[in-house]
Length: 251
Image (tube, rainbow, N blue to C red; front, top):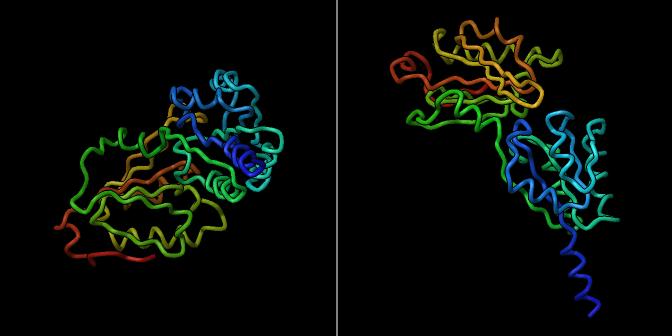
């Protein structure tokens, strides 16, 4: 009987990882329902004003904006000492390019806590609409998180490509990686090839922006790229690739 009670207690320990999308108005009814099930909801991204109706829907809400990644994980884990159901509210798709939620997920599962992840609108969804990407090159669409592959960036001109987190290249310590990236782009793509720097409208920038340029002129526009900027370069036609090396090029 004691073992049975312990198992029931563990089942009651549940973490919901959910998101309001890339701005609060995109929160789903499913996520709002899950918010109300939580004894306590944490967030590292929700701001006041537009997001007040979300925090107001929670039994208890706490901001973790000032904490680092490890402190955030520890705060969520500690909450289970006194609560049975806890929520962690983030932005975009809960797991897409989100190191914090990945770490929280791993730590909670290790502690025997049930983790439920709710789907949400991400920057990827917004970019598909912004760029009318309802049709792709014959080789498909490729997603690259540039921040994690700076030392070895495969370039595939035969594929439509979205490079995420490109603003990392503008950090002073990444000057060398930025120059190598531009050098490889120049060798791989025709100078006239389209290149678009995309900032989706989000909680921090309701207007968003698109900077349309070319591979040859990209370096000049790149200073405006920040931590949420995505670079889109469509596939090069076979004829245009012909005088260059085909296949996968490494930086």
